[in-house]
Amino acid sequence: MAKKLIINETEYQYDFRQTAEKVEITIEGKTFNLDKKDLNLSNDGKHFVLNNRDYFIEKASARRSSAASEGSSKSPMPGKILKVLCNEGEAVKKGDPLIIMEAMKMEHTLKASKDGTIKAVKYSEGDLVEGQVELVELED
Image (cartoon, rainbow, N blue to C red; front, side, top):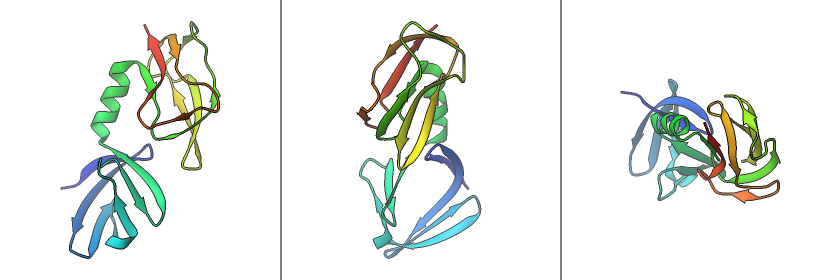
């Protein structure tokens, strides 16, 4: 049975099998056979390196429920804040862009998860942040 996960903000269905020397991963019906030497899993189970590229994983259901219930925007992975698009006390609508960050050589725009007011902007342009840290706090 296929499982669901999110890799770099995209949801996928996958299956995973391994032997002593190989790893077989089926993502969206496409199968990849890898030598274990090409794949390094982190101890926390949320990060892996494949052919010298970093990837970040989280369970799809956990990501959606936490973002909706907390009313805050968290960094999807470690990166650098490129631009802060909001200010404390500012009213925002669901989907409004709040912060642009760079992670894994890609730009990610973090958006408001609900209508509300910016309670706190916790980082500034140029700051380096870890994954899953709160960047902006919203209040109703």
